[in-house]
Amino acid sequence: MATFEIIMPKLGESIIEATITKWLKSPGDMIAEDDALVEIATDKVDSEIPSPVEGKLLKRLFEEGDVVPVGTPIAIISLDGSDEVPAEGAIVEQAVVEAVPFVTESVAAETTEEATEGRYYSPLVKSIAKEEGISLKELDSIAGSGKEGRVTKEDVLVFLKNRGNVLPAVQVVAPVQSSAPAKQLTKVDAPKVTSDAGDTIVEMDRMRRLIADHMVMSKHVSPHVTSFIDVDVTNIVNWRNKVKDTFLKKEGEKITFTPIFFEAAAQSLKAFPQVNASVDGYNIILRKNINIGMATALPNGNLIVPVIKNVDEKSLLGITKNVNDLANRARANKLQPDEIQGGTFTITNFGSFDSLTGTPIINQPQVAILAVGAIRKQPAVIETEYGDVIAIRHIMILALAYDHRVVDGALGGMYLKKMKELLEGFDSNRAI
Image 1 (cartoon, rainbow, N blue to C red):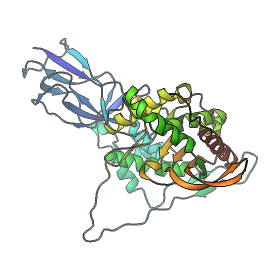
Image 2 (tube, rainbow, N blue to C red):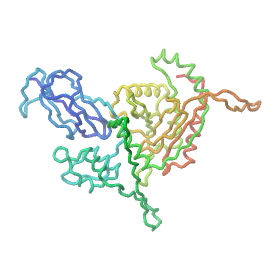
Image 3 (cartoon, rainbow, N blue to C red):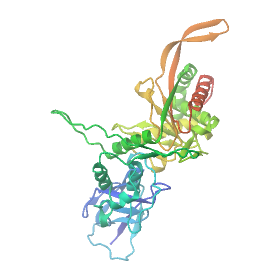
Image 4 (tube, rainbow, N blue to C red):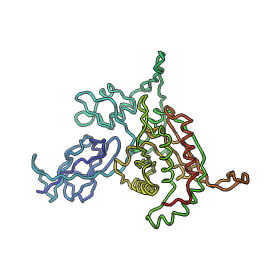
């Protein structure tokens, strides 16, 4: 009897395990090559594992809710349709497959607390616990409904729902030199909402829940400030109009304004490295690499942020190809887990929906996010050697939201001014 073992695939450099969230096939089901077998989840990505072979599913080695280490067999497939399960210790061919992400959002962080001896918590549970301020003592008190009493995401959500009207106070630490007692802040509950006759109630899917939790967490963690600047991008618009047809014919793909914004953003981050940073307590981590995330809207209305690594080291052509590739695969749900991790700065394009500007929320643990507004023709005053004149120009608004713990208004303003200088000074005769 010829059989295959399906192995839990590697889902990223820092991911060592995944939770089985849903089996899509049952023992005895016939499976075609590339049929999805199971849905798995980590605190960073949800994926489907496809079958690399055709056959019959003989046995599922784990149940839904189980946490499985990377490299562990999770299912056995019979290639000849036999119903005989191989004996323990028998030689079985293994198939390591590539997981296919279907909803992804890089939103979670690892907890700094360790689980008590004898009790295991999955990365997802630890992530929720950290974001919601659940102490290790509270976590240990939750009755787990998973296998062998493990605490599941649902257990934590139930705990939070019944936790009480006031969440544990957030301590505001006084300066080291001061002996004044620390102040306490409490989180105000959201108002109770009731539905009326005719209303439609739509439950958030898992990805939307993660996004919602991440956004709320970010606003709690970082004091947000947003600065704005308008930019004359007429040179860039004229340049793109001049090269877009030739570029499409030569490279087989379109050139948009986005790669130019990424290039200018990376150059500005090199000039002001404190904007390319993260905060760890009272330590500021200045990132060596400039990895810019590209907020991308998905067809289902959710959001994903693929990351272009080392943008400052790439040519405009290289950035263009990266932008197009990641955007296309993001919308087709074909990104790999590593491609949504490691961002140090994020750009979101409000202009793609014709919005003039906005106040974006920082993608933690970064300290800033840049919003690009719609490009509009506007009358503008132009200084010439013969005096000021009014002309029709292409104007765009940039909005930089930043963490006021480490980025002050002066620094945020200087960053935007550098962006303005680079974009307005764009060479309209530039080759690509």
